[in-house]
Image 1 (cartoon, rainbow, N blue to C red):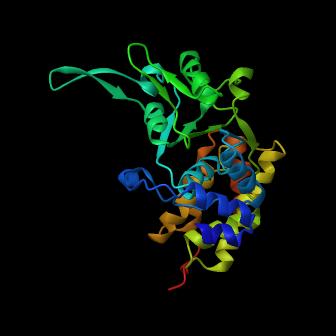
Image 2: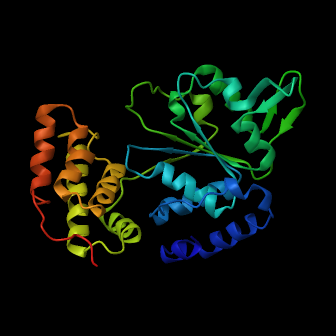
Image 3: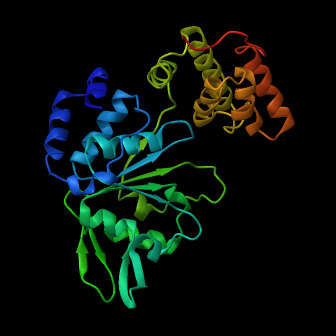
Length: 301
């Protein structure tokens, strides 16, 4: 991963500071240090994120889908060599989910530690996914954890101080059903990065890394297709439903198993729009980039 960051010309002094941050031996937590499937590409965003974490700040990554919010979050946990906990917010996420609760084990009452608690005591990185779906009682828990107090005060138990290296990286995407505006108090506890759309150049790098045997002409066609849909979405011609980077990756995986490229893309991207008018626009746009039938293999032998 460090070699990849050097290729992106990330500030060398920042990388040295990251190396210092990583120096602690946490071999007992290795199962929580997960190598990401993808590398995030974007020098400016990398440098802002690394600087914020080295400064002791928590991060909020905001932006539309396919901007790499969760990819960057997992990349950060990995390069800083910290155990990672993923917390997805939804209607049932509450205090007990985040911090923990009493439960029975071997005939006695014990405290079941939640992911926020585990991050606190192990100096972990907590990834707070779709934080703008959090209920009010879940948000109340986060206030003391995220500000200068850095504590968890559990009634009936000892007060827990957050580890020096504990950080929280939240993600949010406006427009999803169930999301809401973050209140000012919570927003003030983060450094905020407005995640840019992936560029054509960076998408090429991502596909080249993930699929080194993918023929260049098809890789370029997929990039051109995705960028075209991205532009239409930005201009308000279509929604973001079909601008799905996960879908593009999934469709290429199906192509590796022999499914026709257009059929793969239809399943993974076109059919994710359920409005017939919008679907027609998407379909027509993709047909100009990807032939309906490709007889040769899109991968080099």
